[in-house]
Amino acid sequence: MALDWSALWLSLKVAGWATAINLVLGVALGALLARRRFPGRELLDTLLTLPMVLPPTVLGYYLLVVIGRNGPLGAWLQSTFGINLVFTWQAAVIAATVASLPLVFKPARAAFEAVDGQLEQAARTLGVSEFALFLRVSLPLAWRGILAGLLLAFARSMGEFGATLMVAGSIPGRTQTLSIAIYEAVQAGHDDKANGLVILTSVVCIVILLAAARLVGGRRREPRDVA
Amino acid sequence: MWLELNIRRRMEAPGQAFMLDVQLQCTQRRVVLFGPSGAGKSLTLKAIAGLLRPHAGQVRLGETTLFDAARGIQLPPQQRRLGYVFQDYALFPHLSVRQNIAFGLHRGWFNPSRRGVDPEVEHWMSALRIDHLAERMPAQLSGGQRQRTALARALVTRPQALLLDEPFAALDHALRDHLRQELIGVLDATDIPLLLISHDPVDVGMFGQQVLELADGRIRHR
Image 1 (cartoon, chains in turn cyan, green):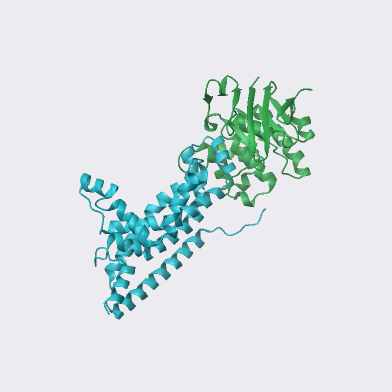
Image 2 (tube, helix red, strand yellow):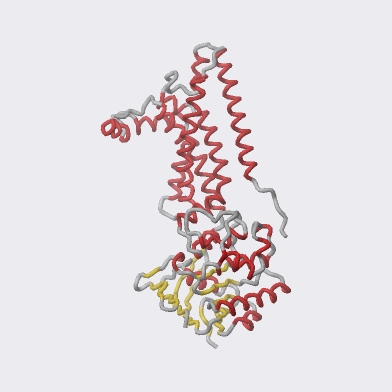
């Protein structure tokens, strides 16, 4: 039974990039939606939540429309840089990022909303700038909720299938992620390969969950008595 | 006169509206803004600190205009250099007592380090007798210790004036008198102007070199 390590490596690479992008994008959007009042705020929240409820094939189709050769972004990238995103691993990163973004920005927004606004006001009266107080007060106090979202997003990105298949295809060694490789193996009747990949995926997911629990648990301060 | 204020601001909440329309001059070093809860005392203090934007009027601190609606002047709270102590103290729960007090001395992107020692911070911790609590987290402090930490955090930045929002309301009776004496000691030592909000007549007696009474959003003249 030959294990397909390239699919595992590709899945980890795609999920890692998607999570890193969502760390920046999800935190920024969460903070924006929690703290700023602007017209269309709830509409923006709804639009960004759509990938969670839309069928992955619909999401994949939308992405193709945008980054495909004839799409606005795709055509611009092609003419300016000669880049074609479709059927590349970067397209898989885009699909995973969009699909898992709601899992980051939603809990981030809730976490920022739970931060006592008076603490931010206190920081202002002490002369600390808006960006500095975001880094020094809001972010550390919201971090736990954000971290939980990022772990879910990583797991979601590892399992992304439908949208990825549509925009990145299934090129072995290049865009064939674990979940797509499993599908292909089953379709082709390679049960041995499918078995191996399924076990591999399960082991990786368990390891990630255990590591995550350790990471979150280790950061928790034990409850202390009031003196 | 160290503070001159003339502001108007309409507050709206579903089903109710409140009009804040306050004119006051602080002519003495220690001023008490006295009145029942809901009179607009905290709103007035927030407007002075720049945490609430009035719709009209001016706020002047000494020679500096902090706010002037007609001239479009609105100094951000960061540049007003006022020592604000919130009613429930608003200590940063993720920072130790020492880090809380040093917070305003570090203006960059990072919080003061857990081990960093600053002479100003140490001075105020020993002056307010909380030096033995330096490593504690706010959740481990008693009410009086929190109040002292918040006061030290405000004083360490050398503010131009102290704004205290009901500083003794959250404390039990025995402790109140003690902490009032302590605050008198700080004021005597620093000669920093004080504007204190309270609905407690005892505070008026102890800090009210000048007393301004606020009721239903307006100064009541006696």
